[in-house]
Image (cartoon, rainbow, N blue to C red; front, top):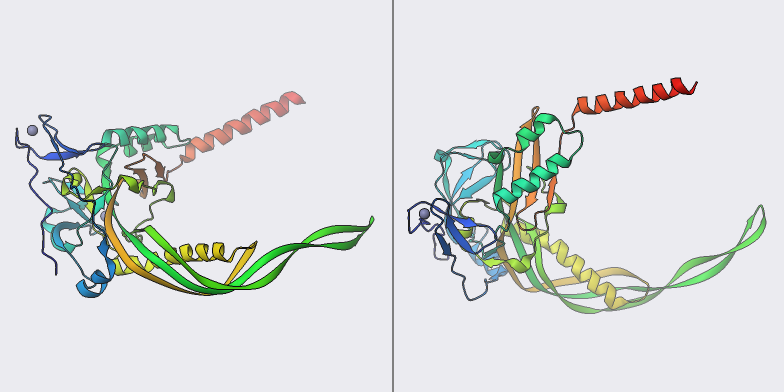
Length: 360
Ligand SMILES: [Zn+2]
Ligand SMILES: [Zn+2]
């Protein structure tokens, strides 16, 4: 077992003693009361890639490098961590109140890196507001419910990334197109047309490649899927992990284990290998009959990626909005107002009826 470190260091304002919070878009923590700011020390060495097989075999399934305080949501099962002291906190995913007494100490593999929030809560709110104002047929009180600033949380979502060298021996076929002229009989006589055919040649060989930063969401999705449209982060902006970046935000602990994440990543590694094989075979089209794919020098990182999530209930149904905390991309589900649509349809029918009457 690795040494157990505590990531929670006290983050008190040097000037007034209040809690310091990470200032999005910077590498600073800031006091909201007196404006005092402090730089987050940047580690000079780049964040380390951890050796995968060591973790899977030696450290084991429940590998962890430190313990953190986690709050479990009794309603949806998400586990969440905050750096600061809080009076009341609601689940980021389902808005259920979380109870301080439910805090558990749990082990986790300390994240190696994270993409710090670039947008602050105010900016996220205004993106959200514009979006809500721009949607048609939204119930009037949706705007009130959705724009409750208490309902929006900044969440660091856990991810695994995997790197590996790929080697594969393959057997398959290279296809080359050629065209044949066919005569077909129609009502208007005989016509000719070109038909594409493929000639197949055997192909085999071995390829080498590299899988770089295969990204696997480590948050179990039985609760809900984060929409594709907001799930792109620029990993060039990864910063070495420092718990000061978490201050003022909620952090989720992974619920997909390293082992399971690794298994899921193999599908992507396989697709990368197949693409390299196809290029290696060449021709117009390819068939891969057999490929023996081997990964080596596998490394991984546990990283955190920023997302604003707004969950609220409307007429007994749960709705969600997501804003990427790095790019500001927004996506969400929305209710429709039955009455607004009903009156619009009625209005159109009346207009058509008028036109019909005057036309006669
Ligand atoms: Zn202060
Ligand atoms: Zn919940």
